[in-house]
Each structure stands twice: as structure tokens, then as C-alpha cells.
Length: 246
Image 1 (cartoon, one colour):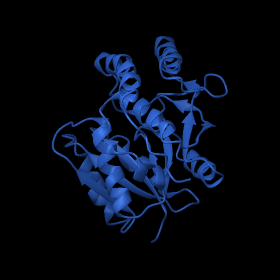
Image 2 (cartoon, rainbow, N blue to C red):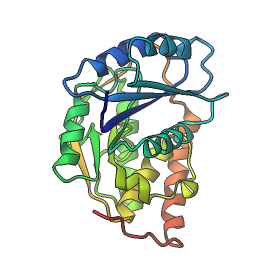
Image 3 (spheres, one colour):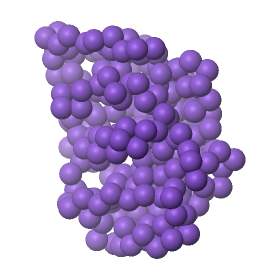
Image 4 (cartoon, rainbow, N blue to C red):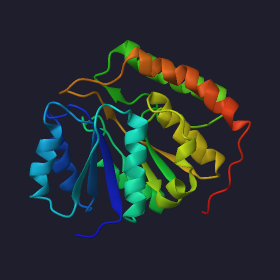
């Protein structure tokens, strides 16, 4: 089955969620394809995906890597795969249902309507987060405020991880110059897309905290983002960004 849209999902120990999220994506009215990037999950996540490939032949794919190599490198691996296989709309999405599969179509529609990058935004219409403890909500919200102050980006949800890229954006960005692999990766990719002259649009979503599995967020990841934002801004002073084709 042909599709112009690929959903990339990095996984590490997501056996409780992986089959359900795959089936939910394939139940949407548009025919999305899925690429799982699994970092050697010891809980058998990859095995579940491989079993499902028999049912979803030609539209469910998996790339296995050895060890936890970081969120950023997983997505870049997926981006290269997507470009090689000539997808036009390339998505980032979590496996844990914090991102609603029904919103994939809304992100794709935003790109069709003129966006180069569409972000599923938790903060563009207030604070749309469910089941997060208040300290986590405040940390995330004020992290975005901090990022806007340092970088000058006008995006409300600067750390969002639910996105749709047009192919031309990923063809323009030099992945070898993307420095961060954790939380700061999401910020760096948005900042870089803007510096290349691409249009980013925020699509309001409701973010729901995972019900099953274990969150990968920790203080080291958050610390990387805090320090990384300054590094991203300073590094930009010494780089030239060729303007992407729109």
C-alpha cells in the first residue's frame, strides 16, 4: 500500500503500549505508514512489532539498534530512512498515547495548508495537559518560556515532541550539525528549521500523560535542555543557514 506519510516512533521498553498504538494509527481514515526505531528493548518490544508486520505488511517497518543511543539519534535515523523511501510528510510521535493518533491528520492538514513544520502544541491555547502532576506542568511550561527568551522563537510549545515535517525541511537540515540527543533535540530542530526560513505552525492538542509503561524523562535530560538552549543560541552566531525551498 502506497502512502506519502510516515510516523516515526522511537521505543525502549514499550511492550504495554506498542501494539495498541500501532493499531490506533492504522485505524485512522488516512493510510499512514509506521517506522519503529527500537533501541534494544529487553522487554520484547521489537518482537511484538515483528509479529505485527505479518498483519501489516508493506506499511509497518522496524529498525533495531543496539543499546539506548538517545532520542535525537533515533529520530535522525528515522529521518534518513524516510527520505530514502521518499515520504513527503514525516512525523515524530511517542508510543505511550500522550499523543492522540487522531491528531496526525490535523498535523498533516496543517502542512498541506502551508506549514513546513506542524507542531502538536500543548500551550498555544492555554495549558492543555491531562494527568501530569503540577510540578511537571510548571516545569514544562516555564521551560518553554525560558527557551523563547533565550532563542527568540515565538513558538509557545518549544519542547513539543509531536510534529509533522515536510520532506523539504529534513532535506535542508544538516543532521551532522545537530548536536543534542535528549530533550534539547526537540528545541534544536525547531530552532534550526526557523533559521533555515521554514514556516512553523502550532496545532492545539490535548497532551495526556502515559497510563502504562515508564516515562523516560529524568533530571539529566532536563538539565541538557537548560544548558543546551544557550549552546544552541551561541552556536547559531557562527553558522550560516541556507534558506530552504518553500
